[in-house]
Length: 300
Image 1 (cartoon, rainbow, N blue to C red):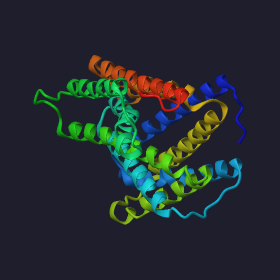
Image 2 (tube, rainbow, N blue to C red):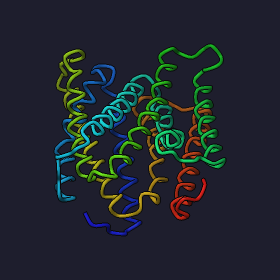
Image 3 (tube, rainbow, N blue to C red):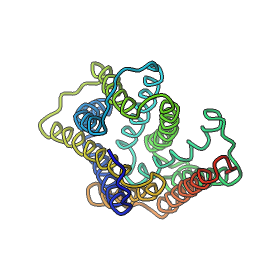
Image 4 (cartoon, one colour):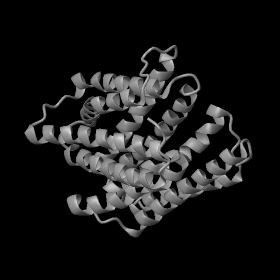
């Protein structure tokens, strides 16, 4: 897929993909109290497979052969774990809070880059990490933490939403490692196949036969997620990744709107303040990454 160098097109596609991913989250939340989240993950992966394969063949040179199957399996396992944490937290947390907490991935990626990639993290990025974690604490405070009144399921959900960031960041760093020797299409194919396979292994233990309403929602989750993947891929083919990161944080706004309309949730000031701190930290980390890329080897 040739790079189109169209920043406006890339931005619009990123905004659309973010909106669709948020809609997918709302659909998961809608059905999550009736269908186990592992089963939802399976349908999400399986029904998005045709879209993923279409993208791979459009990119050209699809190749399944690999000498690093263990690396692909580890990446799929961390990605599936991140998805499980996200899907589970959606079933117990207010939508806006859950969305904000899952945006901690760049924060954890900064910390994990130290042992994984041997990177030296300077005061700027460490300060941003601290601001991001302060945002997590502010959201927790708004949900009743530290005051003894927090619902245990809310506390568990917040924990899993934050842990999602750890595994998502790990998966991202593993992709960086794999991309040194593997084609991007090979990584995408194995991720899709292995995630579907791993989630299928859980079905005998969690299966709940969906009714027609649940089945239609599961189809919608796969379809919306697949279309969002296409748009995300097209966005990255249209503009530099570093120029698109900021647009993904519009998902928090969508989560506030959808949570209010469909679930009657009205986030408090603590949620907005905490989300603002997390986004500010992530954007600052993104800026430092751009500076480091330009300086090639300069300290963050």
